[in-house]
Image (cartoon, rainbow, N blue to C red; front, side):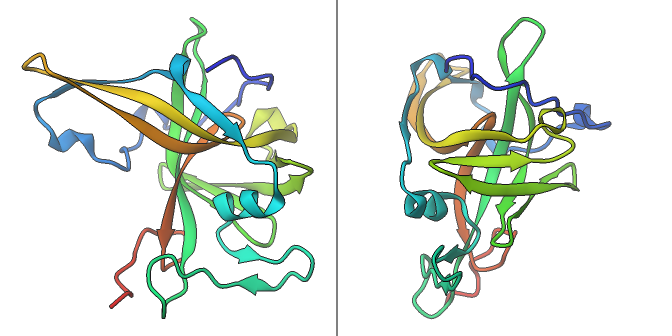
Amino acid sequence: METLPLPNPGFCDPLMAVGAEDYEDEGDDEDLMERIRRFDLEKSETLTSEKAILEALAEELWDPATGETIARNELCEAEPSYVVHWSELLGRDEGDRLVVLAKGFFQFRKDGSFVFVYNQRPYEGTWALDGQNVKLSADWLYRGEAVSAPVERVSTPVILKYNDGKEDTYDEEVFRVGWFRFMRLATTVKGQTRNCACQ
């Protein structure tokens, strides 16, 4: 991943050292020794249509011309579904290495607000379509500066190294907006991961 032409996130939380659990709980695999994401080898595709951006990011889908909600039925026909993201906020450390600063659930709401839940605390702001970009604005992000960035579909090679010397590889698929990376999850409850309503 090349250095982004954006200001550093400037995110500071008093309990950042506590961290957050990965959405995919890797702690269950006692044989896994190391997980390496090759940001330098990742490939990206920029989303250029308003429809594709909303489909990728927005909690609810709507018609921009009328504002009417368009029902999603990604999990079952009879139950509406929504989108929530397991997200990572990246930045660079003192050695200019790419690091994860914070992890948590992220919602792009229809009313133009967003919320990033880190350490069980909501960090709120606003978002808006800005041509082919998405603009994020919050007093806790980018030192209060509103920043516009493209929405990219990113594929990152991941190497899993095990204690017995074996290695596995796979590609991690996420969306990226600036320093945020989003794993898109369909759910039947806004802001939560649940699909038990589907029978």
